[in-house]
Amino acid sequence: MALPALVIGAVGLAHPIFLEPDSAERWRLAHLLLLPAFPLLAVSVFVLLRGERGPAAWGARVLSLAYAVLYGALDSIAGIGAPQQVIRAQERGEGRPPIGDLYEIGDQLGELGVYAFAAAGALTALVLYLRSRSPLAPVGGAVVVAASYPFLRHHVFPPRGVLAMVAIAVGLGLLELSRRERAA
Image (cartoon, rainbow, N blue to C red; front, side, top):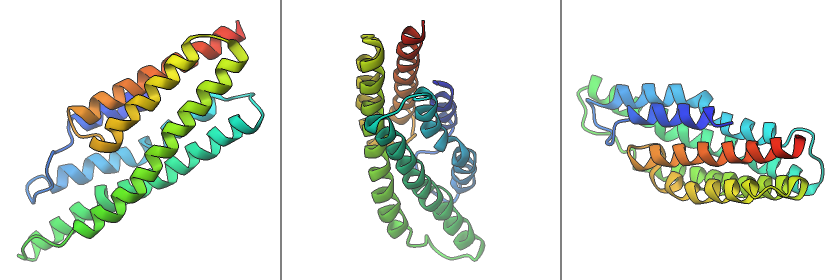
């Protein structure tokens, strides 16, 4: 369960802080690597909820899919599109292109996605707790929800965004442990 968040955090360690002509290629490469990784957080929710039924479980699944779509849009727009604009402008000998609009819409979509992910984490914790009564479920859910705030504010930028991903990995791991307690 923790692996997707840890992979995202590891890529985040190499993510440039600022998008400049000299960092644009690394910025774009990081996001090309992250493009398939971000949706794997949603897959984690689905795997945690395997075999679970009911409105809360399905709500968590729908919210995790919303996260995958919305955060994927942010990743495509601001993570891949914006550096592409910077690279092409530099190749043409132009000044910095106006990429603020890309960040604006990308950030709005990403914000909604992170809220959806946090809600999916909370619902997942509720479903797992109601099945197992394991104290690990609410703790894991609380960690995922709390870590969603620095994820929202700092994406995967080092160090805060990377630490957010590590915390999300811990929270998802605790949720998996609570699921296993129930199975045992």
